[in-house]
Amino acid sequence: MTHSGNPFGQVLVALVTPMTADGEVDWPAVEKHMDDVITAGADGIVVTGTTGETSTLTDPEKLKLVEVGKSVAAGRAKIITGGGSNETAHAIELYKASEKAGADGIMIVTPYYNKPTQAGILTHFRLVADATDLPVILYDIPGRTGVPIKYETILRLAKHPNILAVKDAKGDFSEVSRVLNQTDLMYFSGDDANALPHLAIGATGLIGVTANITATPYRTIVDAVNRGDLAAATAEHKRLEPLVRATMTHVPGTVSAKYILHGLGRISSPRVRLPLVGPEEWEAALIEDELALVTDVPGADFSNFRPDRNAAAGGALPKVHGTTR
Image (tube, one colour):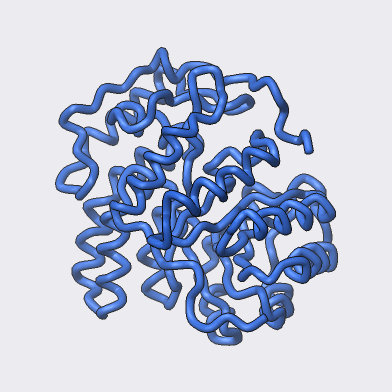
């Protein structure tokens, strides 16, 4: 299947999944948060990704997140389903179901824990891409999966008609440039701190965690790069840096994003599912110290920030485990 143009958007939010204090998905909060990030400038949302706690979501929860996303977006933003599985057969069925649920695209992560060879990675991606007509983003994040998608493998995958993009969390800018020169693949920055550097060498956009808190600066950066105004993009990048550091440095991004969103009064609970836990006292203190340095960032007003370390403490043990299918 041939897709013209960019079917994903440019400012994509790696969406957190708001939960209640007992670890159940807070569906009204999910709807509100989706609307918030779209209103703030996101033109794409990645649900059920790493930040969305895909490893501990059930398949019905993942599919409902797609359905809710499509309803809330109402054409204002693309809904991309992330995650997948390190079992190829399961990934195929999950993405087929996501397509039926209305997803606009899929993001396939490199099989994790198994540590397959490049031949195994190639086969996994090809079979999943074969199973759907949706446009595909490859997710290259060796820090989590244990194995990178090597350059030669990316070149071979680029020939698949459904594989249109890569989310890069590898940070190898020279490889990104090589792939952009050798293929028609789009690149999305998968590291919040590297969004502008990726865009500066030709990336299409970003898939960001900090964008849960405010997507507006990322919209400003992308729009500035699109019109060739690197000075404006750099100025916004600099203003955003303390918030990115607060979100991405001290604890997993999911944990810090929920902690910050709850402190801003935008979600009802900062709870995450085990084995993730809320920040310890010293980690929370470091996050708050970084937030004190955030000034003049559109959509990130911390004058009424009220963090609740007790509410964030520990992690939830849901009634139904995520691998139930």
